Image (cartoon, rainbow over all chains, first blue to last red; front, side, top):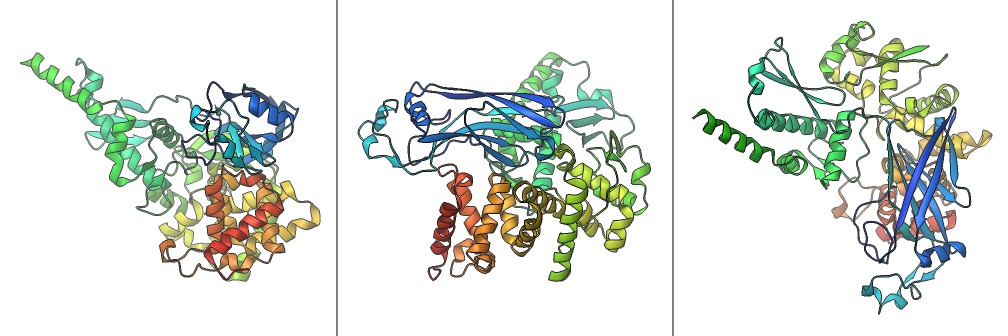
Length: 283
Length: 248
């Protein structure tokens, strides 16, 4: 599985989210080619750790490519720098993530590792790891072939036929706020966007409640976003990404307001300022 | 057979969907129908709900599902077969008659309709379970051995569910290795048993689930999916022993 969260490892690990190594990095780039009934992934990586490169050369460590979409596939990366996968064995139209893992194949010591943080200076000769233990994780490459407007969440429209003053509905990838009258969305006012923020808040609230209700396994249980699969529904997927980027780790009915605060940018404060300004201008 | 996928928003209003299903209106309402049309050849329906019935009936239904999926659906593009819209469309529109005959309650009860026809597409969904089982076993096993592994999955369903619940273990090789270990080491019975004397774990915690859960926690410090069978067997037993002191 793709791994990118901060975590405590019992031994030094090279990755973009740990600081056990200094001045060393491990990055990955993937390019995808479509060959009719199969996909080809060209793999390029950059690793400037002498210690780990040396282990790889001496077969004391191996590299695995992990491809995660609906399931997880592991490929040992030997000299071949590409991998072919038949289309009936992988899903790509949703989100696919790629990461390289370097794993020890023998018992190893960190004694002769000059690239570790000085913190390890006096203890590194006591650090041993067993075979099958992770040594390094590359940056994550992401492939999302699906979202048409990945950064847009809302669409506001006027619809005189609705049976209420406003109506919040969910399209395939947008939260739709329908107004019965143009006036309700502060038509032709300065700071129109900020003035609309209370609708945005309501929209996010309703969308997140539906997100929880539709995706949780037991009612009331809430969701652990670290364990959750990328949702099929595109709107949910956008909300999911947004929450992950903003480091929201779990969501439930109780913490919705905190989640909205994290994923939006001071929408209430901006709204209040816009109202203040409007009042002053009117007065 | 031609399948016209339902729009992504088809399940926004389940009450309405249920009414339209009852009256066979889904196929006629443009508000439901997307522009995604697939010609999928001659395919047959298969059992998609194995939560009720006797053990024999369940086994029979699973076997029939595995068999039909292998025959008709395994070679379709996975982008399609892993899309729940495809299956929901297929069984609500194309195979509506089959489903009503097999589960008459889908037109009588909203609940049964929801559970059988618009069930979330994850490890608890029987289409999902069956599809992954067939894909993984075909990827890793050939010919006459397949039935053995299909039976192992059905006989160790609780363990299988927990394997496909964790994304990291949604992988053919790993599944096969666990099934082999359970079979060779005779661990099926203990895996299904409830954990005793551990009130901290809730009252329906099983040994097998716990093993999978703990293996998941070890990753990626230990690259569990890359372990060989010997090492994985040792780890499996070590975790069992942690919860069952009497286990040898």
